[in-house]
Picture 1 (cartoon, rainbow, N blue to C red):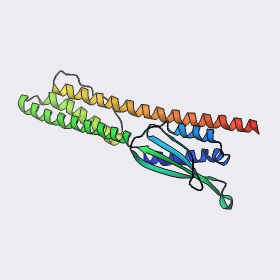
Picture 2: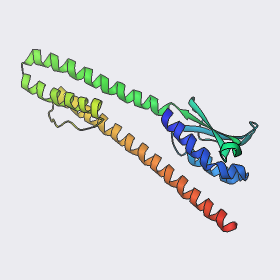
Picture 3: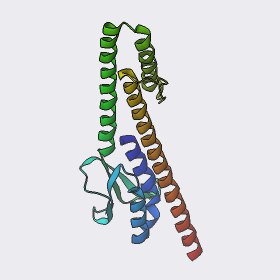
Picture 4: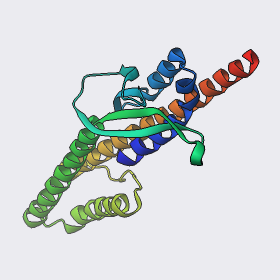
Length: 207
């Protein structure tokens, strides 16, 4: 979240250079609203060089977690002029969701190991237990070291089968979350690029 916040602030401050310089309030507000399409961000504002707020937008009143600012400037070298500053506020909602998912996964793993140990001692069916446990452990190793989320192939109507099914369900939920997040980020970038191009074309046509 910190890396993304810093990168978005850097990119958007560059995009805001022209509208801030020309005092185009509508265009500034449009850019701020596009930033808030990302669920990680809850508030964004633009101030001038004196600190006066030029425009602000907020998507929710969630507790802020990280705030990053980036200077909006024009020119370079001796001709550099500071126009203002872009500030973006991020929430920790997605971080909490990630933490919750990881806790659930840890609980499933602990339950799996305890159940496997009890069943192995009580029933003596080592093969029946060790095979799904090994597959689960391999899946967890791939997740930990390679970031690969894969379903574990094991079907049975006992406790082990239930735990494997729960593990697969958690994997699917997390995979869907990551895909949705990536799709949202891609859509935001496409919208900003498209809108910036439209505004630039309109500006060129006007001149």
